[in-house]
Length: 211
Image (tube, rainbow, N blue to C red; front, side, top):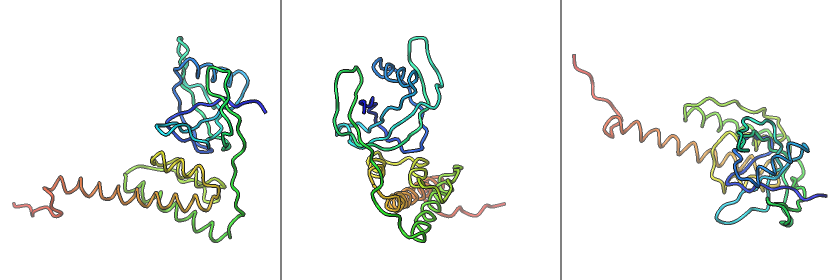
């Protein structure tokens, strides 16, 4: 199997998620040019102060949104299957590596447990959207990648997103997503309460109006 071209970024791409990427470095313009020409995938890996992670997501270019005369481009990519990086390789201007598939390793849980976990994650996603005052399109509850679809709709800490990516059980991911959504909901409600108190001098009740 040929080495996979890699694009280390300060982000986590979930399977099924669509993300816009701005490509400006010459080495990654070269990688994207090859992917477009050969209809190939590339790998997105989280890279930060702790280095490049071992588990990432294959990505395909779904659309070229903008291409400038100097070679820079903005593309829309779609996350595909997860992979584990076995070895970084050399010889190209961009990162490459030997990768192996990274798939769930558990047996399907009881349908009732799956349904309960899915329902809780969706309930919390809807509650968070209401608390934040934004509209959200809920994914289908019977989707086999529901955990990733829910997580992709919320801005989470990179460490939490990478943790979800590396969990090899849809039920465990749904449970963890629900925990993270619950924490986010609590923070959002608290921040809104603080803002509301700030508009009333810290007091919960407005004084009565006088004629």
